[in-house]
Image (spheres, helix red, strand yellow):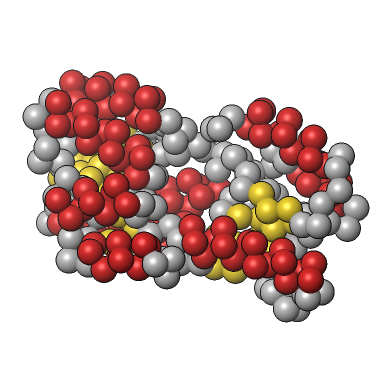
Length: 255
């Protein structure tokens, strides 16, 4: 829902009920700590997905399944910087600043661009995963900046929203990188409308959370024993060269 308040209300309601296990993807770190702790205290295994509910040393979730967001941000940014020849102007459009995934992607982006003194970062404003906000930002950027060589977006939805604005403004020479590698983005990479994305392996994250929950309830699997406290679920970078294969693997739930 892209709304931390609404999500908190829903989780508060869940915390008053009995569950075999619960899997949660928080909108932002620290927003759900109290109701989640209530469920944990009641003996409910809580599997945290993609975004930290709270630092793992502060809340005893059953397990935290997520990709290495810093790696994802760095790998796509590296591909963009290489394609730019190590010089030019780039913009990063962030997700929600309180989202640990967005924080990691920004850290990865920054770790790469600082290695290229010939690359100037023009802007890093967040769009909060909101495609309408992204479109408004990019309407402004395309007016303000006569030269933009590349753009890194914290997810593919925002990247594709901006790509539509670029097309309407006849600025299709901008290299676009995203995160998630969902089917529309893979198609865009195959067709040259996006330069690269990286797979945020939702099958592993969300499917793994279900397996972890069932294993805890049915098999008695203990946190930190049968399943690690933190499971890293990385996926590969997707470019035009490997996009068809990535799409096939996604279609068959392999990645």
